[in-house]
Length: 339
Image (spheres, one colour):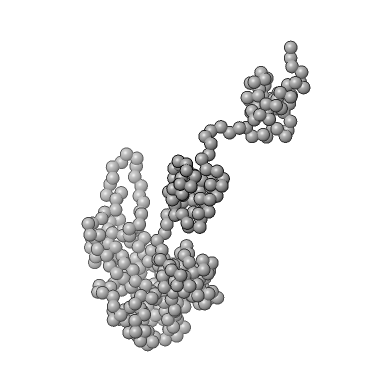
């Protein structure tokens, strides 16, 4: 004898309230899923079924605690989070459990960029500099001659480079980055950039002293200004606070120029657009040549060739980012920026 519809409906509602799915109810009552859906009230049709599986080790409160400590910098990584929670909760859990919790709360792992160490004094100087120049326009920054020194390795930088290889294929010469026991050598160079393009580049073969630096100012810097026919009286010259740049001899030499020297905060390569031009130069030294240079002389030839290929547009692109860099320093209260 068939059950009355009212009894069937009551049984369906009871089983649905217990968390059973439509298919489970249909099987238990020996009826079809469509009949179960028909008799189930709309308020119960979207009822979530009981989730099966292992119970979560960390509660929402535990997760909020570790997220807060990671975001504030009190904990450096998931391993430290795992150690804190294991000790505080007297439970056994893995660092991967903490990583899953962090990802679940919207955090993602990053490769920590290398940045100069900033103490309170550095941050104060950077903040004051940014505030003093917050109203400078792109046109103002284009009147700055940006300078710096950098080291260029014969076998490129120490960063990661990528290549392509077929599965199962043995390593070919173009799949590897050759290294030498003592690095293969490097050169130091000084250069500058302007809104009209890159200035004269010079190779530094001796110990960089104030005397050597003054020679560069009177040679490569002056030639760069003359080459682009820049109005020296309207220019600002930028260099960092290296001792040879701030020495008494250098200060006396700079007074012979008509430009103004831009006061510069310590530990601030992120504010100097030429850093991005150095990075561009070093990338092209790797990408534009199939084989590494045979020696230091060939390395210098390549550096000169790539440097001279850098365009005015590429220089302007990084110089015109200065208003954004200034805003970033202000937003960070003198702290680290993305640049």
